[in-house]
Amino acid sequence: MPGGRRLFDGLDLTICGGELVAIVGESGIGKSTLLNMLAGLDSADEGSVAIDETILGSLDEAALTDLRARRVGFVFQAFHILPYLTLRQNVALPLALASTDRRSIETRAQDMLDRVGLGTRGDGYARDLSGGELQRVAIARALVHRPALILADEPTGNLDPDTAARILDLFAQAVRDDGVAAIIVTHSRAAAAIADRTLTLTADGLSPTA
Image (tube, rainbow, N blue to C red; front, top):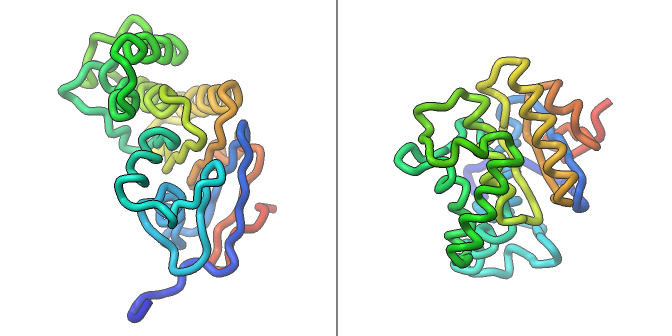
């Protein structure tokens, strides 16, 4: 676009269910922008993004919002856990946005908290949790609505190495158990090491990391 700069040229990526891909690259190269495009939050000047054969560029904003609510999960470095909701309510948010019935919402949110080892903490609040526990809540929230795709932006950037390693193992196991396609954008070698593939993003596109 006029006055802008080209971030990607010739980028081509396909991810299958149950596969975890790590994307690394220099700061400012566009890793977070790439995640935004994959989620339909930003649009490319050329090319297309598809989730389960649905081309995001063919959808209006309401349909994009619905697709994100139903088919995409997000895990952020800053957790984004809402402090005025209980942990169970935080995990249940994607289900509520998808208008799931109340009984199913409560059951599935509790099941996910059980899976991440916080089953007895569902009525508690974020202020009582450590960084690792908050990230476990974030992972539970990302998986609870059984998305096709999970996008994680530096999911362990605020955690100490031991906690980060436990979170990464939990994340990888959950992705593979649920058959979800997942992309982690990271600077962490430990995070990249759990992936099925590690790709380096440059201005020329994505290439396998040596």
